Image (cartoon, rainbow, N blue to C red; front, side):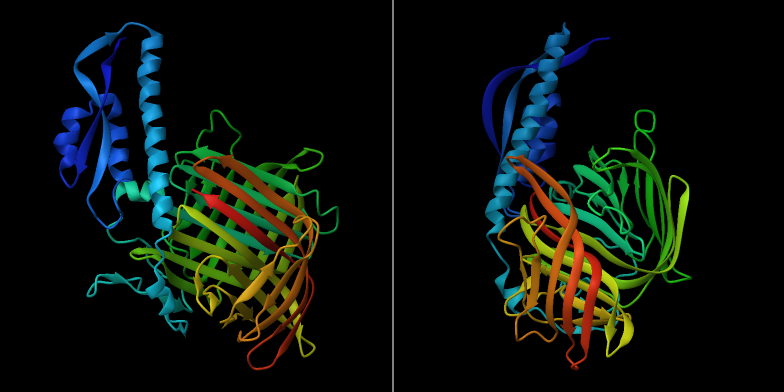
Length: 470
């Protein structure tokens, strides 16, 4: 078997990037081994609103030669891979420049009213996205108009996060698709044992394999699975919307390890999480660069958890969800708070859900559009800035403070004392993922707009700080 490669002359050529160029000018210059690289370069220099750009191509000899050795073959392969890496780096640099171009007009005029019904997402008459907040999520498939293949590859970020809190366990899992890489993680905390010694599972697969996200939070299934069953131990996390029961069916079957002892455990979960009012919104990250997000908290959950065959059934659990489909900025930072717990209002037990953030989805003078509190399934928008103060000392040990400013409609005064954490630290130049998610005990109060005072005590939830360059 022989391979054909092109002899390189290392001559750089600038090629104008416009519709049709890749079929004519570029294809004549960039031959077989570097065609993908030239495409990526062309895309990297586009200004994302179809403005003219320029692409860099490596000119190759038109006379192919036979590759006579493995060394020559590898040189040809690595030259293509190197060019792809350089193209990715160029694109990320251009993205960083665009990140500074904030859509101030849209953010200042964002409609903070929470509307009934579901988001229309796109207006076919005005040919623009419809920004705002709604109490119901999009039922049909979520997709952004005119999203090209390369733009999807580099910019589209999708994830489906779920947490479940029962009397004995706290479970958190996420299915993440960044297009060029996918991640599945799950952890389980036993509240009756050492909470810092969680059971943890994580799988990171290049190319987006191993994760299928649902068409929307209310359509189809999100799945995390082993894409290489012949090489790795099978695993499956599935979360499916069931229209007749208006709920999500959750199933987990995998093997995970203890943090401290590294002991293996077979984990099975079967649960049903009921729908309640949503905080669904479409937000302008930049002009013609939206994010669609469905948040929920205080959702009733029932089912069982099995660890090595030992069953724990529960009928009164509470859950949270975060379904996101976003053309995210290359450089993104956020702080986040999520908990679902039983609390008391005037001595009466209620299902309480809280979802808060900073640095992402912000509107001037209003804070994050996702800030909300749920009482027995009814969503109450905070409509004000909430300060999520990380401790001066150790993020993983010391208390986090969560407090709304005085103009907010809902007043929050909470502390979270970490019991354990999940953390990732990746610093690879153009790619960064610094993520810390302590889970711990919340204490404090929430005062609603109507004056009702909610007492939060011994409530397990999560806080998070995340810096991504993706």
